[in-house]
Image (tube, rainbow, N blue to C red; front, side, top):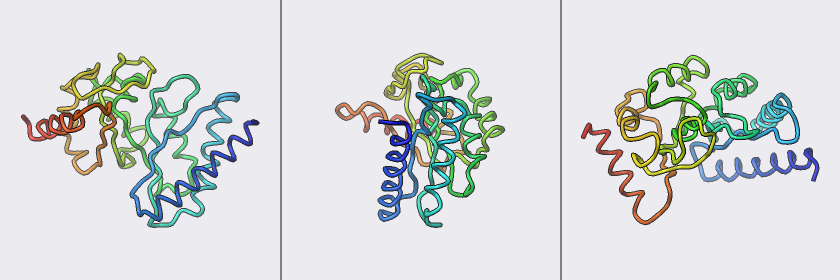
Length: 205
């Protein structure tokens, strides 16, 4: 299958997703920006921007936000650096409908040191993208080490990021009203355990 056919199919699938999400009155669609396999970064970036601008032409004013997710930065994927997300947002015409989902595991794995530089990471995000564009978070620990470029989630406090970062995150007033979503391994009742732990952290326990 040619790259053009893949691009067209990808656009159609995303258009269908927007229609479903609009019908269901969902707040947002969270997605990885994409990759530039078989081509260059510049062409890959242009394809993402062009695709989103085409798809957003028919996006209702009260339709879902489209949220670019921070990625682990592996291989030819786009979105592992704040600058890459900023470049996409810069090219979007309907900027009021575009935002970012900050995935803690991916961001750590891509090379942002949340352990030693928590404040600096979010300061950089604000400087490069704008903290107002942060519309959701995926709250996950990382099974792999800092800057590993490997997308592997772990239960809160059981991975390489550790509890202290999540304690700071849960008490960070900037994110008090930001939706936070768990994507930790779905084993047994671990979702309940992770939620209880995060709530205790928010309460300062």
